[in-house]
Amino acid sequence: MLRIYVDAATKGNPGPSGGGIVIVGDALHEQIHLPLGECSNHEAEFKVFIKALEFVIEKKLNDQTVLIHSDSKIVVQTIEKHHAKNPLFQPYLHTYQQLESHFPLLLVKWLPESQNKGADTLAKQALQKY
View 1 (tube, rainbow, N blue to C red):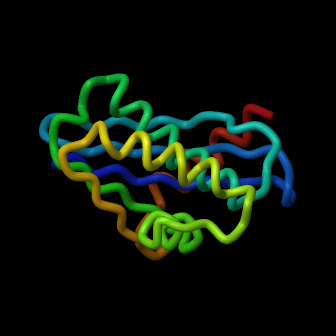
View 2 (view 1 turned 135 degrees about the vertical axis):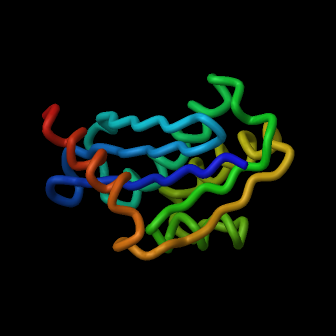
């Protein structure tokens, strides 16, 4: 099983945003921080979530069960309900649904901010690139 932890940080809302991704698996521990451009905090959370899945597919690590953790209730609820009330989030949901088919089993789980410190630190490091 592959575990992925994602988080985003934004200066202002909207403003410059950064994302952090921690990927943990058998003999694997990746840490990634990346700029996400100008967006709202919620959009940044969706962007880093999508980027993490794209990275796993690109690195051909998607042949196993993947559990992705996010401390964003909006992201997790949107994925779980297969519905986005906010029209800005609908393209992210659509992209997720396309990416989901590349995994044998993809689980999404909310976790408290206090348990997502690694991804949070990386997201804040990405903000320093601005």
